[in-house]
Picture 1 (tube, rainbow, N blue to C red):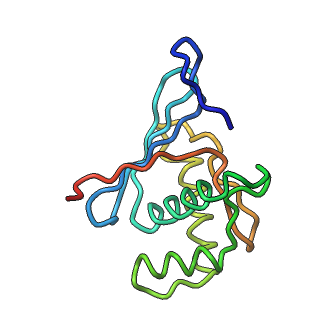
Picture 2 (cartoon, rainbow, N blue to C red; picture 1 turned 135 degrees about the horizontal axis):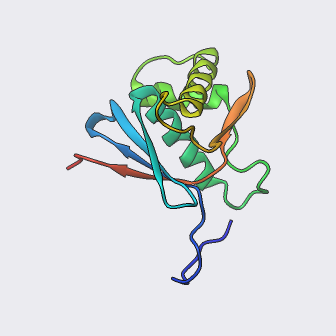
Length: 141
């Protein structure tokens, strides 16, 4: 993946930004499309945590080949998710959350367009992000 410093060069797209509200209970995911338009979707806490876990994994794996960068098995995501939420998370639960999150992004509402493909899922195995997601924490002190 390349980044650009040239102001005349078109930025990478689509671009994703995740705004996480105080306490990680909810957030909003924005996507800037190549034509400059934006779409957004509100997310509940479990989906916010899944996206932030996958983005951290992607960022940690930048030195790995792109086909495996950021991939995490459902069990590993469940362990991190459980620590974040203070509850035990089962791999099957995480698989279900990732599946529902993907469906939500594919069809946010009847009026909104679908998000570009963001999450690659391997059914009953794990997932990874296909694009970087900038994360912003709002309301933190």
